[in-house]
Image 1 (tube, helix red, strand yellow):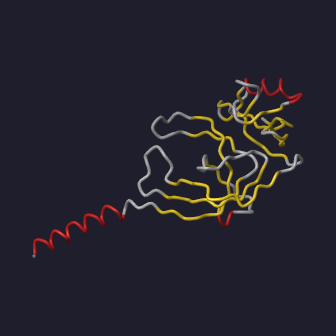
Image 2 (tube, one colour):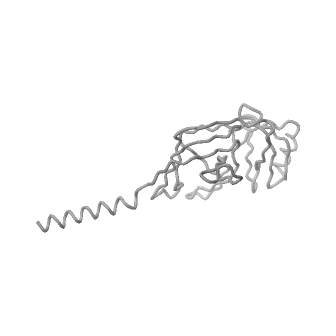
Image 3 (cartoon, one colour):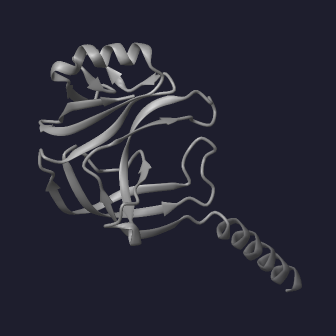
Length: 188
């Protein structure tokens, strides 16, 4: 009988020690997604190679409605469309043992509470080039990382010149519909 009790004690201790540290925690959070993405440079851990990326600007919890925005890359199940401000309910899962090359927090969409279109009168600033990394591509017309069309109007030649000669370039934009932004001004 003593051996069985010791065996049960050993097995229960082993099971408890395996599960307590490895449990992921998930909570439902409210989030606000801004009407334009943030250009950023990311460095995945294993490669340490810097990559230009378009990330979502978001507010969470008490920061909703303030001027404080954070940046991140992905919400599972969410199809982002520039030009709209979204209010979302998402599952935020904090991983107890995240992979070395991934975030410790994952987001998945529960529901879209609202989707409000931003008017063409709203201007916003984006980095077009940071430390010699350009976010402008022209594989199929002028775009931000092959994702958002850029209408540069009379500024196309100036933009091309600055992207080729400057280390850092910013642009002032407004939404022009159909996943297109219109370049209004260039800042160095």
